[in-house]
Length: 163
Image: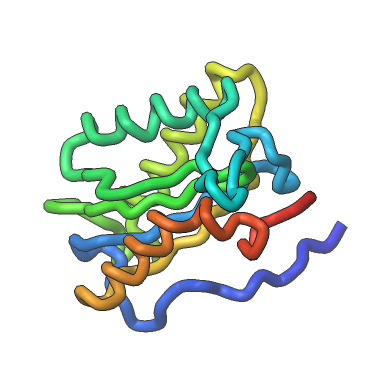
């Protein structure tokens, strides 16, 4: 079976071993809505997130990421079928000269999060890959911060929304 060619989302000529802020998105397998429900949203009721048992497990392991040296979870949100993370990597030893043009600490962090969650749940709930975006300055940082902060308020308009 031939594999489809995926378009690289990597920033050309960027050293992914650099310290800095990264915006990461991880989706559930087949974008199944298993992490939470977003309830409310009526005239007098702002939408709020109610985590499922899977979402609670994900939340626990996201928070434990702050115990890993050189990584800080600056902001995150758990949505019904995906997670957004704003992470700060400091004093890392990346793999800029390795064949893979990615920071080893990013891939390792996501892999570890997925592995612990999947082990506790008993099967794989995530898609294989993840999306990353390098934060390019304060304006970009604030845009991403606000996006994460308000993501649940616009769930039905989200690009990951499925019925």
